[in-house]
Image (cartoon, rainbow, N blue to C red):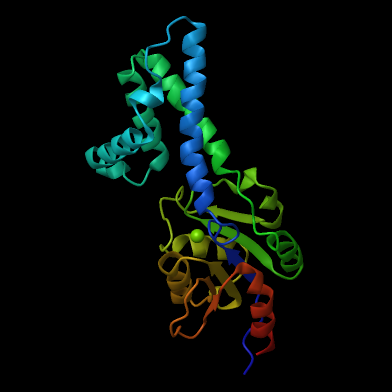
Length: 246
Ligand SMILES: [Mg+2]
């Protein structure tokens, strides 16, 4: 039995094309340390340096606690992590003694730093040549729930379609970001493969739509038909060859 030829491949980003754990840690500690140093410098030049530095009065744990408290107080915003961060920073900076306008300004600057660090991702070395080759035979799209803006990355050139599912207010596992990507790639689920690391947000919803799935995960435990586990994204070309030969 031969199935219809694959036309399109959609890719999750975080923890699929790169390892995201180190990135989030560096981003979290990095923007806070930047704020502490830049603020101390600014206050000293103004001759207003308080006895204790910002991060001494409010260590990273206090910032994290303030975000949790805000998420509880504003339940509709609990998934809007950038809003929670900026709001928590501004509150701590005001508590540190800054006037509200300066607190808001420094919070916004720290968030710019946060977003810059967030985009310092290193795709697995195999990804660039793999996308280059796949892009010649298939239409490619990215679908992410995260706050990476793929237009800020060099990999962007491989993806004629890039879906930011969080900004659509329909994050995966909602089927809409998948359907939007396939519509824009001018194909149907049965002729498309989705590649992602999350069982709940990638594998299940894509399979329910009738897509083939490459699930990147460490453990294998009796997968349903049409879901193919890969230990690493570098194994994708072999899977595609196998799918095309059936
Ligand atoms: Mg992922």
